[in-house]
Image 1: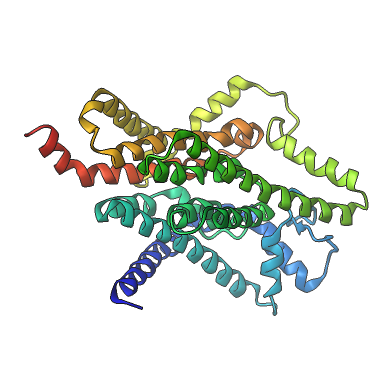
Image 2 (image 1 turned 135 degrees about the vertical axis):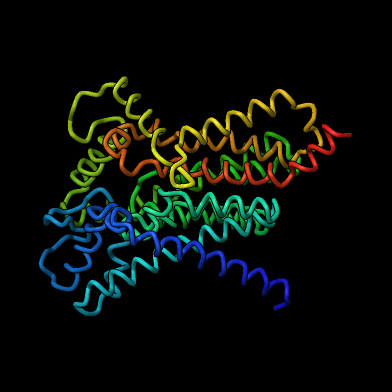
Length: 387
């Protein structure tokens, strides 16, 4: 291994540890420590039951009140239960949480290393600051139900390896990643699926690839994510069949839950699109970065960037990398808001968690865009305004 490769590894591990330390240090705040304890309770109850054999779950995870959690296949509960050898659950759960947290830190570090390689050190540091001051990334980081690194991994892997491996191998890898994520749960799958397209579009725009070819690669990648989802859903239905003794019953129960969380209502109430819109507006008031900066503020910043680039587009003809980055940042809004469109039932009652959709991937792309603008600011001013 040469010196450069060693340095890159040092950078990756150092960044991972910095982010991981932020995650761990944040648990000193009670709200962070107890965030989504009810969801995590599904996994911990399942692990305890795997040792005590108190209930026959048919492979499904177990809610703390003893009911089955049928909305997901629940592979995280199965995997975590495999290594639960004793009855010292508190220690084991802490080890699991730290492991999941470090996996997320490493995932974000891999993203940051990719960003540094493509856009430079200033962009890297601005993005890093944006990440470690993002409350929703911190809140989700250690949760055993969400295993949130799986929601970001397809996006990050695309940024890092899309240009380094053959496209068909990349697609196989995306199928696998999406399969594993879907086995854990179907939350935010539209965001995760579409987020893979953002780096592809950026890289192909840089290569000046024909629009039809870009569209083709995006379509194949999107189909790959759907295939991974279908494989997971198939396994979920098999588990349901084994439990209910009827495939028809399994389809009925699982589809009812999916419908309620998408275009239905989980509480069976009458749907009001006006009320849904008011709820959506509430999301924009919540903090998004630098601990107190709201999501609305981040959108205002981005719109100012878009307006400025549109007005001065003739001055940025030679700044193709920056222009392409702004373009894909704008496109990333489609991915972010896809969950709003497809999962109205989930958005309606999950104001306390769903702000994470803004990071899959819009906020991350905005951090990168702001960082790259800072890195190019002196050259842009000197070239276009002071010459």
